[in-house]
Image (cartoon, rainbow, N blue to C red; front, side, top):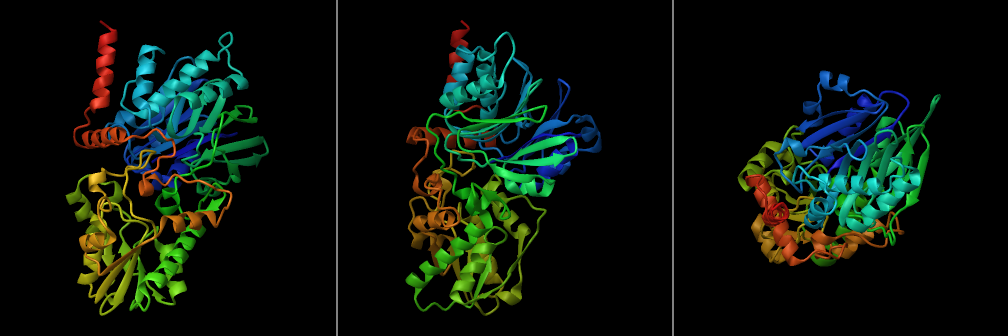
Length: 508
């Protein structure tokens, strides 16, 4: 999962893009990049690390121009360590194009072969985002008329991208000499919004992964970019838009609302904060049905994203809500840390219990979800060490049983604690006295309660139903192998070896 920004403004955009990356930092902590355009010259700086580590004053001075795109990365495809895979990516043919991508393509191998054997394009990394850039560049080249593009040709190229690419992709791209292009996959799996700012010199436009970026950067929210839609903003500040997919349907990733998005964002007409409150209500109703005369003394959230759910659950049960953990905000996410040992160690560094809230009490800990179970196990033990008499555990999301292939780095099925285990077995694994999960239908209802117009969701990590309808068990095996290889050695997986063989055979 990543965060993307794109802007066409009337004044230099380097500071604006940097500030936007700070706001979207929660969407990716491994790499960051900014590309600006001055005349027909791109200025690009990117690297591994947090935004404030990647960009120094000397870097910012070089990022001149009134238009640009920016990206924060958390790797799910490609290498987790190779700085060359930081975005934006750049190609110089048929025009200078830079691109940032949030999501994950599911037919990358097929596209790599097509690019090499048919389109005569070279991809230099294992990133699916670079593949997507080259597919877009090739389709734009096909739409050139006398070496020139028009808006209709740009939208036709996006329509061709939709026909060729499968999976999740929200994209910002800048085409030298033309303008800023943004588009979203036909299912709208990953979020993308657009806002405007009126200045004395004319309109400015900002595209971003979440509405919170618009709020903090002084842009007025206009709308979400629709599934399959493309938006093009030329350098004169004129906005064009067109539906470029044959049969678009809105099916956003429901895990965005559970965990990833900031609570102050609105995505697809739905307040993230409100949906998390709703999750707490539904979870409280289930607890009343299944636990009957409970003996819970206090509800304690595991910070931060579970706080609204825990608060609303406590309110509906008439139980005290207390803050029992203090979070160290200078430790990286345990969710994306490689290695169980490192993850276990980091939990104690990241959270510290307030003993007075636990001592002698029966506590209900509320988390947004349980993925591997390592963090949950450590937190339950922390509560016991702080003096809790009994420790109950509630998850605002259903059991995570399947990998996510659309841009969230869910681990191997074998590493997911809910795969192949009953709720009772999971409860025992994490060391809790009792465990309750949200029902999937209730989770859907919690989001839909804020926006009834959303009829479908991608819930694949919970139910194993992949919205693009192209995911097989063999595909999941290859994805898991590729993720394991990239984290350990950053070496090609079997798919890449197959591609290498096709390339070497074609050159003989």
